[in-house]
Length: 467
Image 1 (cartoon, rainbow, N blue to C red):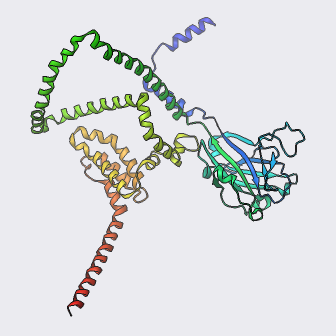
Image 2: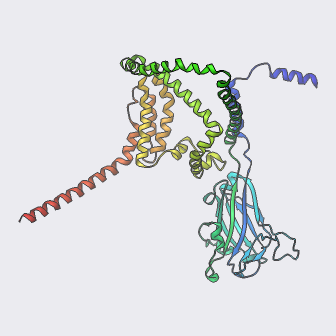
Image 3: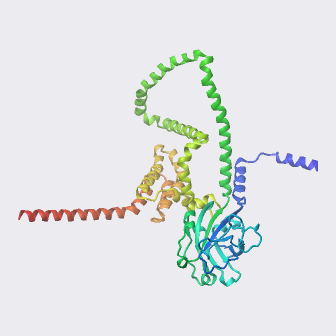
């Protein structure tokens, strides 16, 4: 066995793997990795205003998949722990002493926390049924809840579900969607028992893992932040020690300021001269200026990335990025990007989630899209190569902005960027004119009509006064 192992290992080192092949292999492994199961956690709090004061046997939770399959995935609580103090036909589950009304053993527990485990995409698209069961199945009460319309992944909701008899629910008499509530609302119900429909109070939470690629990005970011923290701590400590000890150990270092001040003065005085030379020779210096600006922007981006990777940078950006991230995460597109709740969103759907939808916001976005597309004219020949990269991006952005108004406009934007000498066509702005132009024109006509009527009335008033 030893020789085989040796030959195997030497064969694996015979030739290096192509970097592109290695990257593609890693990406494929990440995308095809199993995502793990999600968990639907329901904490049953109480059943209120039941048709009678008979003690129910349990609360059963089950789910059926969106394609109609399922129904065997179910779990139930024990009997209620206590009756409500003011309502004889209302029952609490999971009391402080853990007892149950139907148990003779005071040490028995009434589990009120129900957990169903399944693939996250299955749970997210499923319909969950809660059933208050009795010894006589004909008296059972049920309520249904569609998860995708009620919950977000890793989000908790306090719910009040209306209960119906199983026969009424099967006949289509089930009431509307659940009422979202808070803990205070659950604890303060009305006292008119006879007028209140039977309800089930519970806390519902859907838990699930990130998508494999999102999890990989998070792990990579955490490793990067840890490395930056180590380097930052060492660098800051060294720089602080030098700033503190250098003036003490080398008093002559202050003399270095003597030549620095004149040089800085000469530099400031030469700025107008340098600016004039650049303005006069801008056609000749344009490529150099673009290269310098590109390098400066690249260095600035690297420096900004490193700063925001430090502890202080992460703290400062968190106050700005956290609300935006949470808002995005609550959208359907955000859920589909971060969690495995269905098919991954298309690039156009992702762009639509972040682009503005109001009139002025769309105008600014359209002008920026057309400006970037026309920027290739700054470098007459090399700019056309940039268009090959910008063309699909422009198509995605224009489609996200105006697909509802002009579905074919994105193809115009694509061809405009691919064909030579057509970048001057403002395809995105034309979409804005198509969507908002008629409304602006009609509003202008209405205001002109109002102004004409006001002017006519004033003329009539002046004529009547002169008579």
